[in-house]
Length: 82
Length: 412
Image 1 (cartoon, rainbow over the protein chains, first blue to last red):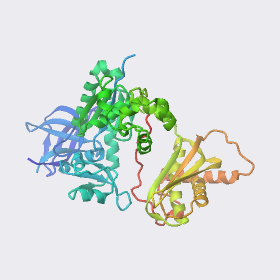
Image 2: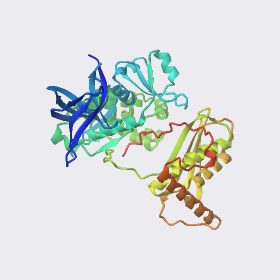
Image 3: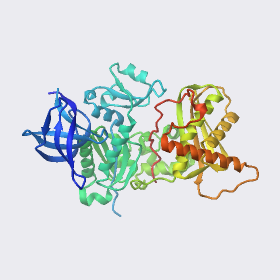
Image 4: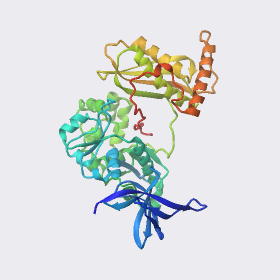
């Protein structure tokens, strides 16, 4: 299925060492979702919607998905359904 | 001595690949990054693998490329993105070595001799780097692995895209001696023409000719090329972040339209000098000489230079010297297409200056005060906060004037 790039609002918590933990995302329709868990973090590119950044593998409502922080754009994006 | 392990990593169709990675809709289509036609930079800067299949070449005019491929998608360049991705790639290289020598934005030599006990042999490291760049940046690289820089570079050109080529001491004669001599780094068009008259066509021919004969024909470069062809290049890979001492600071542009009068040339010269002056101040250097390059609309370039009576950083003094050189030497047979001004014979700005009897030092000092004030205003309120009145009107300088990163000569 084709995917689209969705820039999202993210509520984060940054600890005293500078580590960032995403807590909640707000989708482009205004709905917000809690991030249950950050499973993994690495630098990666998105082959589906383009762009690269720090990729957080997160669990939201029981489902695993990717949340990217694009450093050159200084904003967050996700891969959404078209 | 332990045999060196040198890698040369070349990012395939770099500008075009970054564009396709950022916009996946372009993937699998013939895509080229082209300069602005309006600013007369209308040439192909990079192309995707699909565009390459149509015979599109870097450097050819956009209209020529479109004739070869009607569906060619031409996108404008985004230099800030290319610089960012070039830096991301270098961050990956830094995981393996601190000996990283960039060759332009998209190529780097890496000396990984000291890292093989940690990460495996040359091929293993090349593979890890290649996969890492693909996974993290969504870009592909070709890597050459060899025991010297020249062969590593040659290796990265042999198989593209997303490939690794090994040229070892054992196989280099079989692998590269049959290739055209022009494939070797340092053999450009002029050298190719010269050596062809000596019957040299391949790298093997170059390796097997009498070295004294080559020196006789090509000078010192002849010996270097002979050594390169025989796998005897011993040039080092420069440490990461190493900066060559600055020999000159220049700025040049191709104008939107041809310059048709000395007045127009003066405006461009003054604008270019602002940038040169700013960089001289940043580097704390003074110019003892000025050099200008003028290219006319027949694409013929000429260079003129002169000394400065007093070493300076002043934009106005540099521009005056430049325009004087221009008016004295340029015959206006053709209109001017591009101009470059360079500050040369640089010296530290705190070095004592030997004055002569005839120069007007007071005027120079006054100019310096004005320049420092202008600089302070610009620093505080932005580059356009204060400009010369003559530059208020339309100049023929393109708006997207940016500085490109060109490959500097290889470190030896």
